[in-house]
Amino acid sequence: MSSYSKKDEYDSGYKSNKKQILLSYISIIDKVKILQNM
Image (cartoon, rainbow, N blue to C red; front, side, top):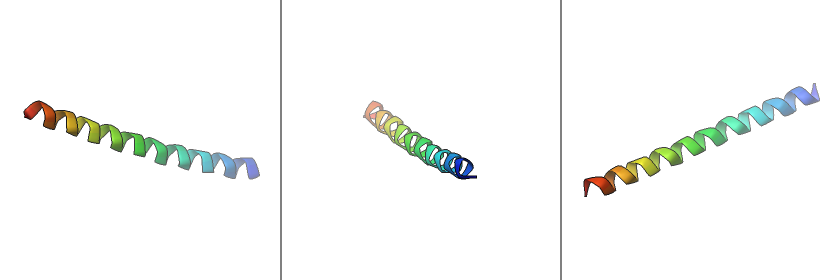
């Protein structure tokens, strides 16, 4: 049971981390597009 909850904790942490990486990646793409339009 304890190992299961630890896995859930890891999965949720991994998902939120992935979401954070995706958001920063999108913001970088937006900055590049703005620079190209100038």
